[in-house]
Amino acid sequence: MSLLADLTLGCDSYLQKTIDQYSLDQIVKADPFSIPAWKQLLTANDPGSFSTASPIPLLIPQGGSDEQIPPASTLLLAQHLCGLGQDLDDVGQRLGDLVAATMVIHEQTLEDVKPVWHAAVAGDGPKLGSDRLPAEDFALVEAFLNRRAALAADVRYNTAAQIVTRLRPKLQIPAGINYRNEDLLEAIAAERRSSARYT
Image: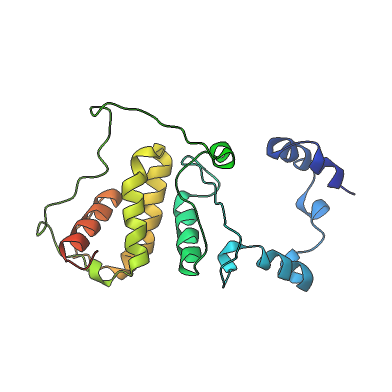
C-alpha cells in the first residue's frame, strides 16, 4: 500500500481523514528509530538534538492557542538553540508578514493596554529559593509572564502548570504554602528581581 501520492493532495485535515481509515500497522512497517538510517535522519532533523548552531537562521512558528505543541516546549527549544548560538527571530510576526518583511501595527488606547504582570512587593511572602534557578529557567518564567495575556485561557493554564512542574523540584517552597501556578511564577520573579542577581 502506498499513500505517498496522497501527500500531494491536501494538508493536515485531508491527510488525517485519509490515514484514519488505516491501522497504524498498515501504515508503519517498523519503528523508524529501530532502523539506523531512519534514526540518523530523524535525529539530524530534530532541532532539540542539535549540538551546534546552523549558519541558516531558524524560524519557529508558534501559535498562542496551539494545542499540539505547548508554547512552553517551544520556549525551551528556543532557549536550547540560543545557547548554541543559533540565529532565532522571536518578534511575534505572523508567518506571512515575516516572509513579506511587513509588520502589523495594532494601535490601542492606554486604557486598552493590559498590564504585563503585577509583581509582589519585595520582602513579602516566604522565601522560595529562586536564586537556585539557572538563568534559562528564570528567562522562561519572564517570557511566560510577559506573554500570558495573549494566550488562550487553556493554553495559559497548561503552560503555567508545565513551567511550575519543571521548576518546583528546584525551589524551596515552605510546607503548608500553596500557590496557584501563576501566583508562584509571579512570586519567583519578584523574589529573583529583588535579590539583585537579575540584570
